[in-house]
Length: 271
Image 1 (cartoon, rainbow, N blue to C red):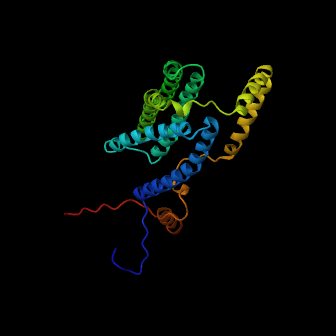
Image 2: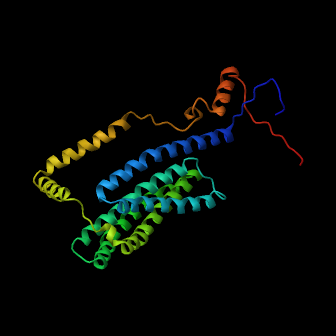
């Protein structure tokens, strides 16, 4: 616009959608900066080694990179929701870390009593089947959204199922390859203290099954408590921060012109 004394603000569906994309991206980056260090710290405690703890994170990152590359192509021909990236990132991190954790944990158990080759074969034959079954269940469940007559839900379901399938393939192909290349990284089974503690926990669990279930339910309830007060609403312009220009303009129109129509004006320009 030419210089004028008027203050111009822009709103409308395209601008609101872009503001949602910016807010979603910023929230996603902030969430990853908080969750990834905590996750890596927990994996370090579980595996007692940096490289074994890094394998699940690398697997999750690889599956998300492949899926996001496919999404960039799908977005040229289909409608993608602004929250699709968030959903894919959430699924990729969750199943990637989970499936790699299953494979690495089983390999370390097998390695305690077998040579690396036999331990790896047994891991793929047992934990590999578990990963395939779990991944197939998640992918089939997400595929149910394909029957919704909403393009954004359809593409989210398709890409969500894809990230799970890619994670399963990497878990049964790339993770065993890493285990075969660097078996020395996974040979340690933990400290002596951990070796004495786990048998006591297992023995107590076997003798007190009811108490074990009660404790587990109490922990789950404690972790779920913050979610009980969540306010679930459909996305609207009110969900944008007050500093968003599109929300400020829309609010000004509603307050100052309550009876006015905001029908679009079509302008045809001959290039």
